[in-house]
Image (cartoon, rainbow, N blue to C red; front, side, top):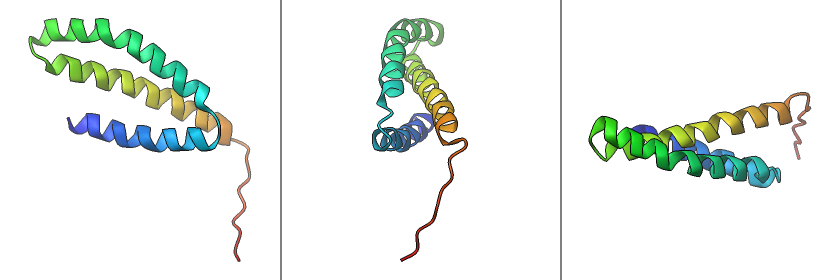
Length: 88
């Protein structure tokens, strides 16, 4: 559950950036792909582990996929951008 909680924190930060930058297409695609992958993966992991923990592991795998893809998208977006600090 600790990994799941950490992923949720990272996803919250990425989602805030994505909404602020109007880059929500990646988020939508990753969530759709993750939802499609999660159900068979959860079923497989429940059979392997023999417990409902397989569902939590499948959720972490799918959310981890989103985190990696969103990080790559942000790297491409911010690469080459200059940031200026405004002091008033």
